[in-house]
Image (cartoon, rainbow, N blue to C red; front, side, top):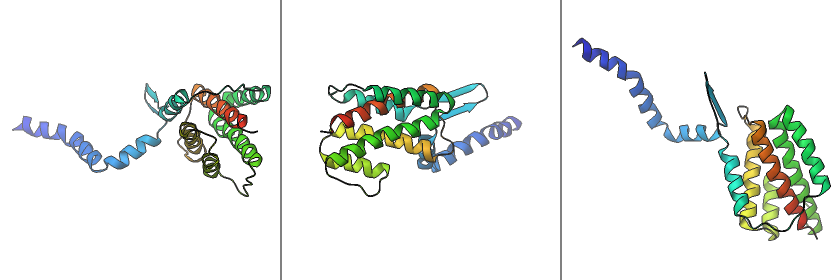
Length: 181
């Protein structure tokens, strides 16, 4: 009988955790979707899922012949220096390249945006008809990563992940800027 009681004691907490996790499974999924890194004692995992999805989207897009200008390279070098100090700040700052290119694009199209936010910029690019749905999806994924970096206090990104984001942002801005004519 004592062994049976000990067995029940040993299984009580794991069973309770599994049961609670099952009850709150949708909330747990949402929480895990927001986590960008995890560290417990000597175990550390980085979750660059959003960034990997954006890179896959970028690979599936037909690449127009766009050359990255010297100005874009200079801006990227500045962003890389920022990433050395604060990868999170570099992600937020890299989004401004996309915003600037989109604003120039909309001005040449004769559309004046009185007020802008990242979602309005995305909607404007989509409405212009100049970009494929895949390109719009890539820019949306970059916007979502930028939003996480801006608004989630527990968001953490490594320097290498920030550099990958910067590369995608510079290329996206160059593509947006290339449609200005």
